[in-house]
Image (tube, rainbow over all chains, first blue to last red; front, side):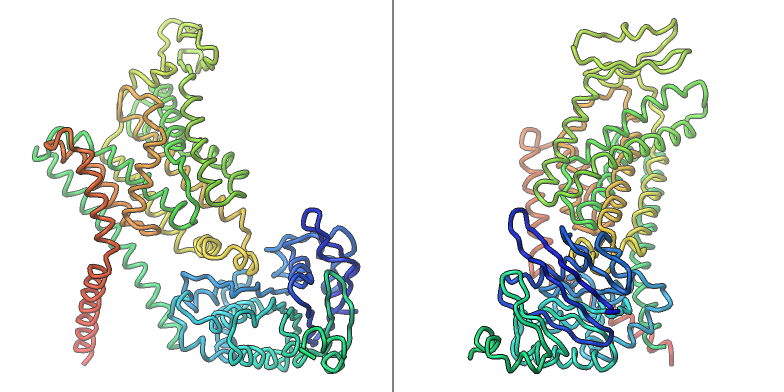
Length: 235
Length: 367
């Protein structure tokens, strides 16, 4: 069975039907991406999986248990970590304190080994570990948010638009890290507007338009797909 | 190994600040007590000692809500009021049961804290879902509602126990409580508490300050405190790392309310007459001014700001009519001084010099 299995979810913001009959799955060890333009419903889907929003229908199954009604703060202890969009770090805390917060649901003895692992993956964060997070650059804050999520030892890591608002060179770096994490065995669900980058790291992808899945396939196939090219890759 | 040492070092820095805070408060208490016993303090200053302690606790506890939790509360005086009147009722009804005043005072403060804590829970559960301006408006309204409620409260005590009536029509008097012979009126509606036996003492105020500091500083340095500060910094991120927003918000809010209640009980038992109108919007704002001037999240800053700013209007008495004008100017000057980049830079350089000097010393000592 798939690690994460989302079936027929419908999510509304008041009267607005933002996500329509969406079904998708993520298998262990995969990088799966949801791509689409602004307002396609990508972030809404992620928020539904992480418990911030509720679906009116269908089910969200993670590791064979239904997590549809689980409140957001309890999702993480099930092994599902989310990196919220927009570099959501604790601005007034130091880098290391931010990372320690990532291990909030873990026993204290796991904090130090966890820090070590994250610093291996993000040497930049190690250099700045005494620095206040608010003084980091945008790219560093994104790395910090990702590192913090890893501190909870997630089975599945969900990334919400990690490239948002970053310079191209930093976007490259962020995706290099995603590749590294993938190679290390982390399962990743990636929501992105930057279709080119997302598809280049993903095993599989789903293309969303106004709340519906319009195409699905392997990352490589979708990169070559004419309709995807036209809509997102500029011809 | 090196990292572990680093973490210990950081821990030491915060505990050092905390330790200095405890030490400073204790030293101030000893010095002021000695001055008072020698008769150096003026009469009016001696009379201000207990209220100063109360307002220090008010400021420190409001700092937990405003500075640490990051929510603007404009109803802190409401919790003080709840604590003050429940404290007075408790102390007055236990007069024969607990003849020893300090114990009675302690019990009254605990009861005041409990009731204020419950009030904090009742207000907090619905209100903490709101944010920013809305929370400020609701807490403001809470303070006013408490004031009006106590304004029509009649409480008396006799051999049979407590008699309580709500004078909503405005036609009831204390006689309508039908108390037996020898009963005492504790709260008389808009007149408030009258004829209270004043058992508050400076020593009790000191103990209360120390207790508040222990509670708040330990909370702030704990895992829960980290969680509270995390949700202040970024709510969504806090939720994503597994922090239960409602739980930790309530924890901070109720602790803050309960401490305000204890301070209120001490305050109430310092005056033989006390009306509910004392704890109005102005009082809430006054405490907020202490917190903001002392620095948001800065506990010892709150202590100093509360003490100095409470004494200031008295000290400015010689300006008579211009007193509040001078007070306002002083507030503005303090704001300017603490936010002035030049002065900030000066402090930073001083600190750097001091720490560098210390480091050099340590190195020299090691050789």
